[in-house]
Image 1 (cartoon, rainbow, N blue to C red):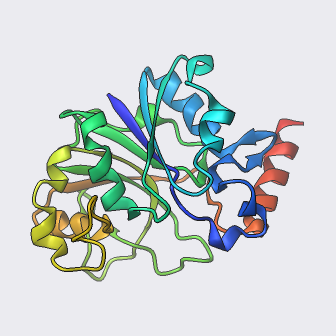
Image 2: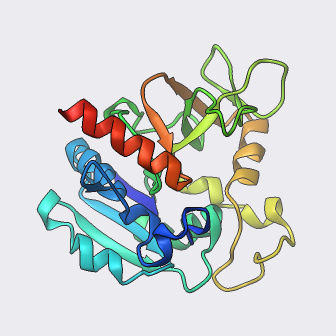
Length: 237
């Protein structure tokens, strides 16, 4: 299995911290956010990791090198000055990810979740990790039913997508039919969001999920970064 780390965001909500450092390279407890993922991917036995980049892209190889210190091979994929969004970024990375299912994780989150608890082969086209809704996202994203299927519609309580999942390349096979003429879809390479493809797959019961009730943080603001840093430092003491 290979992996993709989404690291191409502009980090606008994290300024001024991201004026000179891309968000996935900001540190918590002395370790860059992205390195926490690299450690867990290496522990899982993954050898090849694609890191998509945009803002301050040259800092990633300067900081992380070729991945050898974790027993990984890092492949940096520059998307240009404007990120391709999650769907476009995943589509752009497919030639490096191959034909088998792959793990993808957002570079700006932190969690104590063990990637080994994810399935190597999703039942459908995607398997997503869900978490309890944080204060900044109280409405959640999707509904996880008792049979492990994810749904976009329904009356049951929603959970929040953790930014961690396993995907089959087939999820993006007919992306144009789902995305249509959305802004950026006609560009080369195309720029589009992943969520519409996930919702279309859910309508065909092709997305499963699981609920992680451990620790998880979407490091979207300087305040959340500072709070997470304090928690990890205290926990390590």
